[in-house]
Length: 76
Image (tube, rainbow, N blue to C red; front, top):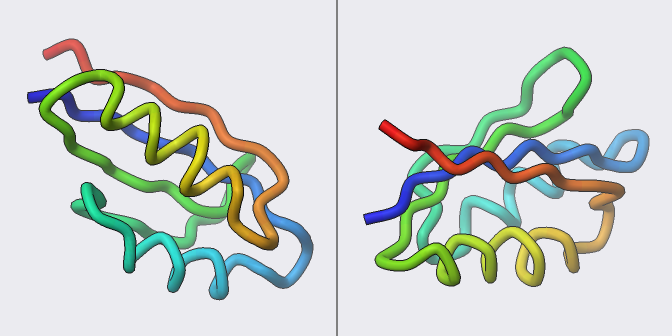
């Protein structure tokens, strides 16, 4: 099992819309709007690294209102 944290920067005023869209995706275990460098933090799980990267690089990055993402794979 692969667990990852995906940090999402959104366009101004789009955090809630992005959050709603992210929460509908498969493989998402948690997602929250946060204050700080990023606007939304997402936790994703997959059987393989590819599964998590698919969610990050295609599903989330391709959403309307998403400006940038950074994905961090858990190693513990």
